[in-house]
Length: 211
Ligand SMILES: [Zn+2]
Image (tube, rainbow, N blue to C red; front, side):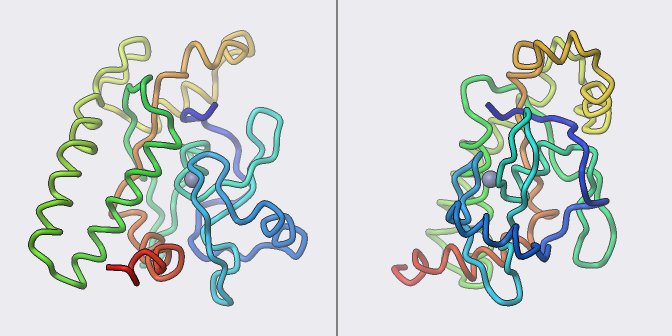
Protein backbone atom coordinates (compact mmCIF):
# COMPACT_ATOMS: atom_id res chain seq x y z
CA UNK A 1 0.00 0.00 0.00
CA UNK A 2 1.67 3.19 -1.20
CA UNK A 3 0.90 6.72 0.00
CA UNK A 4 3.24 9.71 0.43
CA UNK A 5 5.91 9.15 3.06
CA UNK A 6 9.00 10.87 4.31
CA UNK A 7 11.41 7.93 4.37
CA UNK A 8 15.14 8.56 4.77
CA UNK A 9 17.10 8.56 1.54
CA UNK A 10 20.48 6.98 0.80
CA UNK A 11 21.25 9.78 -1.64
CA UNK A 12 21.10 13.54 -1.08
CA UNK A 13 18.88 14.07 -4.11
CA UNK A 14 17.01 12.11 -6.76
CA UNK A 15 18.86 11.81 -10.07
CA UNK A 16 17.78 10.65 -13.49
CA UNK A 17 21.10 8.99 -14.39
CA UNK A 18 21.74 6.92 -11.28
CA UNK A 19 24.45 4.26 -11.75
CA UNK A 20 23.45 1.05 -9.98
CA UNK A 21 26.02 -1.24 -8.36
CA UNK A 22 26.55 -4.65 -9.98
CA UNK A 23 24.43 -6.30 -7.31
CA UNK A 24 21.66 -3.73 -7.74
CA UNK A 25 21.68 -4.16 -11.53
CA UNK A 26 21.42 -7.94 -11.17
CA UNK A 27 18.50 -7.57 -8.78
CA UNK A 28 16.79 -5.06 -11.13
CA UNK A 29 17.17 -7.55 -13.96
CA UNK A 30 15.65 -10.31 -11.86
CA UNK A 31 12.66 -8.08 -11.12
CA UNK A 32 12.27 -7.28 -14.83
CA UNK A 33 13.07 -3.57 -14.27
CA UNK A 34 9.50 -3.17 -13.06
CA UNK A 35 8.35 -0.53 -10.57
CA UNK A 36 6.55 -2.19 -7.64
CA UNK A 37 4.16 0.75 -7.21
CA UNK A 38 3.02 1.82 -10.70
CA UNK A 39 4.07 -1.24 -12.72
CA UNK A 40 6.22 0.74 -15.14
CA UNK A 41 8.85 -1.31 -16.96
CA UNK A 42 12.17 0.41 -17.66
CA UNK A 43 14.47 -0.33 -20.59
CA UNK A 44 18.09 -0.14 -19.48
CA UNK A 45 20.61 1.45 -21.86
CA UNK A 46 24.37 1.86 -21.62
CA UNK A 47 23.99 5.52 -20.69
CA UNK A 48 21.10 4.87 -18.26
CA UNK A 49 21.54 1.37 -16.80
CA UNK A 50 19.09 2.02 -13.94
CA UNK A 51 16.53 3.44 -16.44
CA UNK A 52 15.02 5.69 -13.79
CA UNK A 53 14.60 2.96 -11.17
CA UNK A 54 16.04 2.58 -7.68
CA UNK A 55 15.75 0.43 -4.59
CA UNK A 56 14.13 1.68 -1.42
CA UNK A 57 13.11 0.12 1.89
CA UNK A 58 9.36 0.68 2.39
CA UNK A 59 7.55 -0.64 5.47
CA UNK A 60 10.44 -3.01 6.19
CA UNK A 61 10.73 -4.42 2.67
CA UNK A 62 13.12 -3.52 -0.14
CA UNK A 63 11.19 -2.39 -3.21
CA UNK A 64 12.22 -1.46 -6.74
CA UNK A 65 10.57 1.85 -7.66
CA UNK A 66 10.64 4.32 -10.55
CA UNK A 67 11.85 7.77 -9.57
CA UNK A 68 8.31 9.21 -9.52
CA UNK A 69 7.11 6.57 -7.07
CA UNK A 70 10.39 6.73 -5.14
CA UNK A 71 9.99 10.49 -4.66
CA UNK A 72 6.46 9.89 -3.34
CA UNK A 73 8.12 7.85 -0.56
CA UNK A 74 10.94 10.36 0.05
CA UNK A 75 9.12 13.70 -0.06
CA UNK A 76 11.98 15.52 1.67
CA UNK A 77 14.48 14.49 -1.01
CA UNK A 78 14.97 17.13 -3.70
CA UNK A 79 15.24 16.19 -7.38
CA UNK A 80 18.34 17.24 -9.32
CA UNK A 81 17.33 19.14 -12.43
CA UNK A 82 19.15 19.27 -15.78
CA UNK A 83 20.67 22.64 -14.90
CA UNK A 84 22.12 21.28 -11.64
CA UNK A 85 19.55 22.97 -9.35
CA UNK A 86 17.84 20.94 -6.66
CA UNK A 87 14.04 21.11 -6.71
CA UNK A 88 12.21 20.52 -3.42
CA UNK A 89 8.76 21.20 -4.89
CA UNK A 90 8.70 18.10 -7.06
CA UNK A 91 5.00 17.38 -6.72
CA UNK A 92 1.64 18.14 -5.09
CA UNK A 93 -0.39 16.36 -2.45
CA UNK A 94 -4.02 15.52 -2.99
CA UNK A 95 -6.80 13.77 -1.12
CA UNK A 96 -7.89 10.80 -3.21
CA UNK A 97 -8.72 7.52 -1.45
CA UNK A 98 -10.45 6.00 -4.52
CA UNK A 99 -7.44 5.86 -6.83
CA UNK A 100 -4.25 4.05 -5.89
CA UNK A 101 -0.91 5.86 -5.84
CA UNK A 102 0.40 3.54 -8.54
CA UNK A 103 -2.49 4.22 -10.89
CA UNK A 104 -2.19 7.98 -10.50
CA UNK A 105 1.50 7.89 -11.39
CA UNK A 106 0.87 5.46 -14.27
CA UNK A 107 -1.76 7.68 -15.90
CA UNK A 108 0.06 10.95 -15.23
CA UNK A 109 3.28 9.62 -16.76
CA UNK A 110 1.40 8.55 -19.91
CA UNK A 111 -0.15 12.02 -20.23
CA UNK A 112 3.23 13.75 -19.71
CA UNK A 113 4.87 11.42 -22.24
CA UNK A 114 2.14 12.00 -24.84
CA UNK A 115 2.45 15.75 -24.34
CA UNK A 116 6.21 15.60 -24.93
CA UNK A 117 5.75 13.46 -28.02
CA UNK A 118 3.13 15.84 -29.38
CA UNK A 119 5.45 18.80 -28.84
CA UNK A 120 8.10 17.35 -31.11
CA UNK A 121 5.52 15.87 -33.52
CA UNK A 122 2.78 18.53 -33.66
CA UNK A 123 -0.62 17.01 -34.29
CA UNK A 124 -3.80 18.98 -33.64
CA UNK A 125 -6.26 16.14 -32.84
CA UNK A 126 -3.68 14.60 -30.51
CA UNK A 127 -3.11 17.92 -28.79
CA UNK A 128 -6.83 18.29 -28.18
CA UNK A 129 -7.01 14.74 -26.85
CA UNK A 130 -4.12 15.39 -24.44
CA UNK A 131 -5.79 18.59 -23.24
CA UNK A 132 -8.98 16.61 -22.58
CA UNK A 133 -7.05 13.99 -20.63
CA UNK A 134 -5.34 16.70 -18.61
CA UNK A 135 -8.65 18.32 -17.74
CA UNK A 136 -10.47 15.12 -16.90
CA UNK A 137 -7.68 13.56 -14.87
CA UNK A 138 -4.96 15.94 -13.69
CA UNK A 139 -7.13 19.04 -13.19
CA UNK A 140 -9.78 17.09 -11.32
CA UNK A 141 -7.10 15.61 -9.06
CA UNK A 142 -5.60 19.05 -8.44
CA UNK A 143 -8.98 20.34 -7.32
CA UNK A 144 -8.52 18.02 -4.33
CA UNK A 145 -5.30 19.68 -3.20
CA UNK A 146 -6.88 21.55 -0.36
CA UNK A 147 -9.15 18.72 0.65
CA UNK A 148 -6.89 17.17 3.28
CA UNK A 149 -9.01 18.01 6.34
CA UNK A 150 -7.39 15.78 8.95
CA UNK A 151 -3.96 17.19 8.24
CA UNK A 152 -4.95 20.80 7.56
CA UNK A 153 -2.48 21.00 4.70
CA UNK A 154 -4.41 23.93 3.31
CA UNK A 155 -1.63 25.38 1.20
CA UNK A 156 -0.54 21.91 0.11
CA UNK A 157 2.96 22.35 1.47
CA UNK A 158 5.00 19.28 0.56
CA UNK A 159 7.68 19.95 3.17
CA UNK A 160 5.04 20.62 5.84
CA UNK A 161 3.38 17.29 5.23
CA UNK A 162 6.74 15.53 5.02
CA UNK A 163 7.86 16.87 8.39
CA UNK A 164 4.51 15.90 9.89
CA UNK A 165 5.18 12.35 8.75
CA UNK A 166 8.86 12.46 9.67
CA UNK A 167 8.22 13.55 13.27
CA UNK A 168 5.09 11.45 13.80
CA UNK A 169 5.10 9.42 17.01
CA UNK A 170 5.60 5.64 16.83
CA UNK A 171 1.95 5.24 17.94
CA UNK A 172 0.79 7.35 15.04
CA UNK A 173 3.02 5.53 12.57
CA UNK A 174 1.57 2.22 13.75
CA UNK A 175 -1.70 3.49 12.28
CA UNK A 176 -0.06 5.21 9.31
CA UNK A 177 -2.47 3.71 6.81
CA UNK A 178 -5.46 5.10 8.72
CA UNK A 179 -3.89 8.52 9.16
CA UNK A 180 -2.07 9.05 5.86
CA UNK A 181 -3.59 6.35 3.64
CA UNK A 182 -5.96 8.61 1.64
CA UNK A 183 -3.28 11.08 0.53
CA UNK A 184 -1.65 10.80 -2.87
CA UNK A 185 1.35 12.32 -4.58
CA UNK A 186 1.00 14.00 -7.96
CA UNK A 187 4.39 14.43 -9.68
CA UNK A 188 5.28 17.72 -11.35
CA UNK A 189 5.49 17.67 -15.14
CA UNK A 190 8.40 20.11 -15.48
CA UNK A 191 10.56 18.58 -12.73
CA UNK A 192 10.34 15.11 -14.28
CA UNK A 193 10.48 16.31 -17.91
CA UNK A 194 14.01 15.07 -18.50
CA UNK A 195 13.23 11.60 -17.15
CA UNK A 196 10.00 11.36 -19.14
CA UNK A 197 11.98 12.25 -22.29
CA UNK A 198 14.41 9.42 -21.60
CA UNK A 199 11.53 6.98 -21.09
CA UNK A 200 9.85 8.26 -24.26
CA UNK A 201 12.93 7.19 -26.22
CA UNK A 202 13.12 3.77 -24.55
CA UNK A 203 10.09 2.23 -22.81
CA UNK A 204 7.51 4.12 -24.91
CA UNK A 205 9.25 3.42 -28.24
CA UNK A 206 7.32 0.25 -29.17
CA UNK A 207 4.01 2.19 -28.82
CA UNK A 208 5.32 5.12 -30.83
CA UNK A 209 6.31 2.86 -33.71
CA UNK A 210 2.64 2.00 -34.09
CA UNK A 211 1.54 5.65 -34.27
ZN1 LIG B 1 6.52 3.83 -10.36
